[in-house]
Length: 174
Image (tube, rainbow, N blue to C red; front, side, top):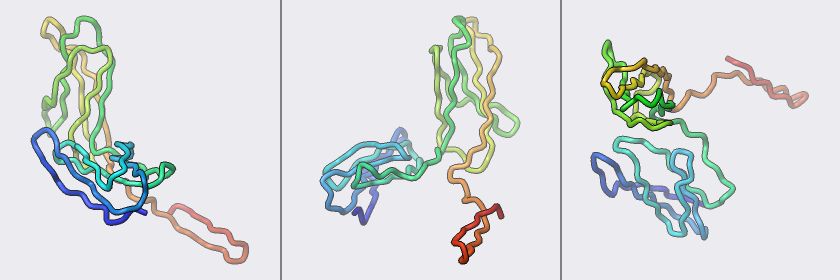
């Protein structure tokens, strides 16, 4: 049984923050998950977790390999795209803010590319676009992504009715 789970910031920079997670328990092996993904196993009562600055990871520690964490919802978006052709020098990643497209990053001309945003506001729609820039310096046709971000969805609103006579529980939308 895991108890007294604590996290302490060890160090932080503009690139990463390192947290030491510690707990009490009597198992021989512990399974540490960060944002729903197993980050490692350990036989000691602590584990160091490295995250992006400002991130709010969900950390779970179990003393059984059979235990799995609850689903975790991301704090950003990941964009993915295929190459627009051999004449592309770079890709410009932009976010629509107010009435302007703001450059977020650039990426090389790989055949398949991904980019992850930093932490973004919850319960809002975010619009991004990927603009291929040719070897001649001209912009190609942009690909646009729109994402509604909900970090931790609200529980559904339901009504429950229990019939003691036949032992039936009825769940319906509220």
